[in-house]
Length: 262
Image: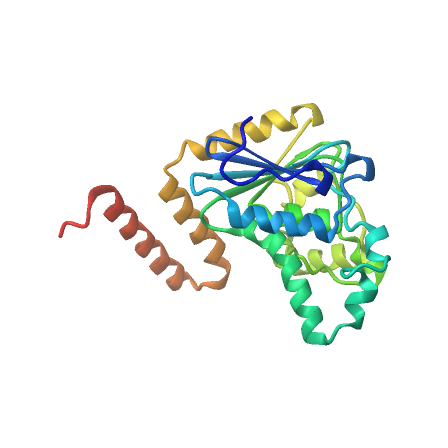
């Protein structure tokens, strides 16, 4: 696999970027600590989003080792660094919210309409790991996957862009139950309640994700982007508004494909 125009991120930070043509792969690479996440990793994820080459159509988010991500690295969260929970609590409300907004950008760029994002999830995806997978458009998971929104155990709330997607996927009642209990969700349940796009044997995870990426790339780039935007906006629109959005999107596609006729 070759790197693209965006500078590869070093393994020491805990995130690695690689590009193979129109497919970019972002890999969490702290397997010794189950890919527990740090603010430094979030900074680098944000950097990747800003440097992502324009020819990238699919972004795969994956992780090394036996877990996707054990969530927030508690040694950092409970330390005395600038982004520790203690330091955040000392900021004004506005400053704290601004700091969290910066953290969120490491996740929310995965929802961009110009790319299709796929999370390849094995083992545990806890807290920030769960939310990272939720921010992706699709989640292909191994049969050993386990999800948990564990922030409640720390007296915190999920704040990295995962609550809306979770609610859209499983409904408000089930989303509330998942978040307030912090319980584990097996791969079978994730499939049943709509969290998973596909569940495959762990040994077949990489191949299944590659096949899905190839299927996305087989579609017209403009059509894929319009379809993603149509579906993303559908929950906020009435039927009449969605019908109008479809008409407008199709008009743009016809103009792009066949010319405006002017």
